[in-house]
Amino acid sequence: MSIFSKIKQTINLMKDVDLDALGKLSQKVDLSEIMKTVGELDDRQLAGLMKMLKHKGGKKGQHKLPPIDGDFYDLSLKLSPEQRELQIKVRNFMEEEIRPIANKYWNKAEFPFEIIPKMAELDICGISYEGIGKYEQPFLMEGIIAMELARVDVSISTFFGVHSGLAMGSIYLCGSEEQKQEWLPKMQRMELIGAFGLTEPEVGSGVAGGLGTTCRLEGDEWVLNGQKKWIGNATFADVVIIWARDEASDQVKGFLVRKGNPGFKAEKMEDKMALRTVQNALITMTDCRVPESDRLQKCDSFKDTAKVLKMTRAAVAWQAVGCARGAYESALKYTKKREQFGKPIASFQLIQNHLVEMVANLTAMQTMCFRLSELQDEKLLTDEHASLAKVFCSMRTRDVVSRAREVMGGNGILLEHDVARFVADAEAIYSYEGTKEINSLIVGRAITGYSAFV
Image (tube, rainbow, N blue to C red; front, side, top):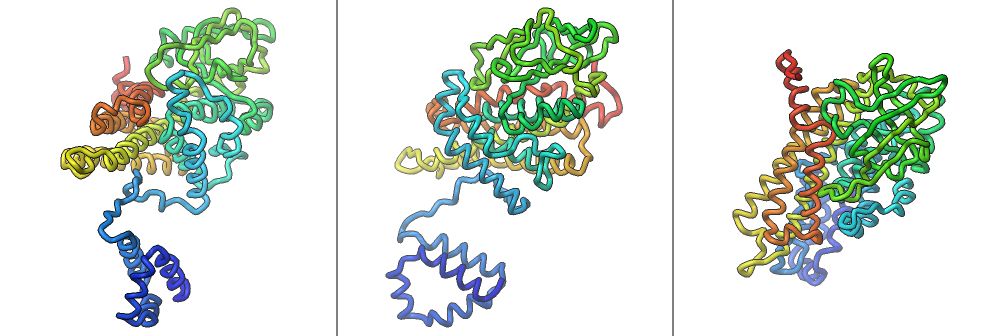
């Protein structure tokens, strides 16, 4: 940085300084000599000076508080300018478009369909897929996006993850070139919305051991029968990826079931305590006929399905980070404003202890997920890497949201402060994309060499 650039930076910063005080200062010291000295400072010294000026620039007697920011270790500094620009773009969208309506739609258990065209303008669907993504470290950016969405509303993050991750990912990894060309461009532009149907009423964690939903080939059509449960987006999706067990081979196959397909019924699930904005469905298929051309051509067993889950599980860990960050930042903001006994509760020792525990957990989660995404971008990601992050982050998120609710006292159960929503949504994150127990066994198998699965 040139001397002139340094001086210009300092002058711009000093615009916030009291001008009367600056005039009085000029009567006491040689300002030209000061500016010359500033120009000779190195970057570290200049940064220290600017930090000091920022904290001294307020009115006399005013206590200038640090900003509310959950990125305690400044991981955002590791992002390129282009990556950081995308992160800020997504954050601004969530703050301006989603935060004002998040609690209303969550409380009503309805989805704000009007946001889909606005979200499409962000151009963030499928950024980790070759031919679509344009960012370096695309999996890292996918994680950052998941965090930023969940930081404001985990429901919107889940809607996006189902569409861009699970549904598009199934077509990307298991579809033919013709299927990719037909679906992915329109799904990337969010002109068509996708869902992912794997979990069943009686089969959750045990899907690898056998699905109840079956398929059989009759001529050039497949006949699907069975049920799927907890299928996000399915009440309105244009296409639902359905996984079924082939009656002939006993192997898992994937299908593109189009909206309005005869024999396919999606009923909205009611009375959820978490992710209420997400439209989960109970799907019933009764002799649902799907043409061979809509079978995912590169899926021959559950191992292919597992590839999709491994790819998206990292993003779910990032969702947990976002949920925890949103709760922490909301709680920190509250404690700085809420006064008891004549002063902000943020100045109390016990409250600060809770806040420190929260930011410590959050920072550990963020750094773990950052490294996880680096491994994914380096093509070194394993099932156990993703599972460990899902286990740890979903557990720590529970702790963070609990403490966030605690420092708010009774107000912690009110939606208006957001934390109540984060507390409830953390429970969904804890269970989906593999329970804590199942993901623990995946990691346990990797570190011991013994499989403890039944």
